[in-house]
Length: 227
Ligand SMILES: *Cc1c(COP(=O)(O)O)cnc(C)c1O
Image 1: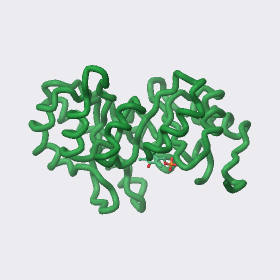
Image 2: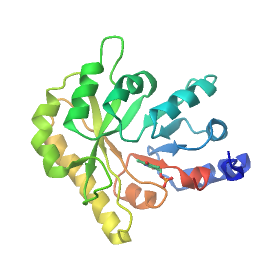
Image 3: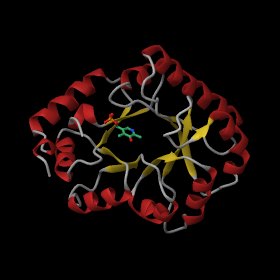
Image 4: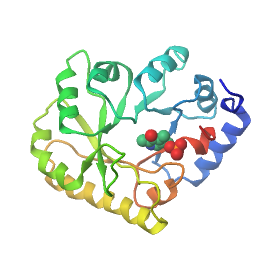
């Protein structure tokens, strides 16, 4: 482990306090601790954070074990979920923000039982072309909508999106506003889900996301420093 992985706890607490002072009530701050040791999660917890984001299931499993004395952490999965990790995800996370295909949604639905309830789910949508990212294009999601709503065990809460790197500030703002509008359009069509949640905004762009109506931001570097 390199020395830069040890972030000073006073620094983490200060960054969290600064972030808090900027956020309106009701926006959930998910501290993204991917590739960082479990010890930094403990520091964030001590500073009041209860929502933790990770992008690999194996990392969630390891960190949960190390942090078993902190039972009220809400674990958010934000990475691409491979089919063979669905069962492990259902056993270890409270939210999956990155449901990125009908196929994955079907897998999750299939894995839910009376003993293994649905996590809260966000559907990942791309509002700008981004070949490096998973997710539906908006029109594809509309096409798949009826087939999604048939998956009656899923607890779908809303949408997640990532603004591609390299957009201008105006383009990023427009993308987040499009996401909010699209969520509202979906609500009109939705028969089963109330779709309250909009997960968008990272260290580079969370202010724009909040201004556009994000209900949850996912920030890593702002809290924990560079990875
Ligand atoms: C890594 C990651 C984040 C956090 O990114 P930062 O730039 O560190 O804030 C948020 N969302 C997703 C999907 C990520 O993979």
